[in-house]
Length: 217
Image (cartoon, rainbow, N blue to C red; front, side, top):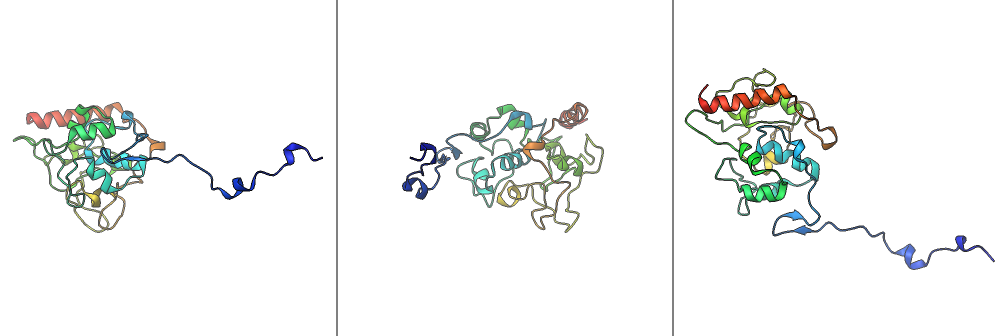
């Protein structure tokens, strides 16, 4: 009599496909029922909403359409919007990303008489290489990155395209790259497995410049 260990499994087990847990979507909140993968420690001071959403997209493999709707339920994802205070639904973002509302407010443009922001996407090539873009880079009177002291760039080095600073599908689905020709703005951007905290000196320099521009210094 053959041992029990040698017996074959029932034929219905061989025919049935393996079962895996299904990640369902809560359409009322546009979030998975089991939650997104995201950590507060991934966010640096005065990081722009564009940069935050790029990281969120990378960590969760989301489409630009889903990301755009996180800013408001009635937003046209292809038209998008300028990420300004009073325009973006901070409560909705807070619920999806789990980030403090203070962090989200600092990620949005807050124009004043002394601090004006560019309508074109501006970036520091070295910051982008580490997956970081700041609202400080969008200030019109800032010509060099406070952290790296290199020139702020506006046009793609490959095709010369100047991307509008609007959070839409086109911008969201080309993280750290030109949305026209898809060439990198610098390096390979950011990955969750390579996330590193910003150096303290860089953090201070960016905060000092942001506050200084608000005060007209």
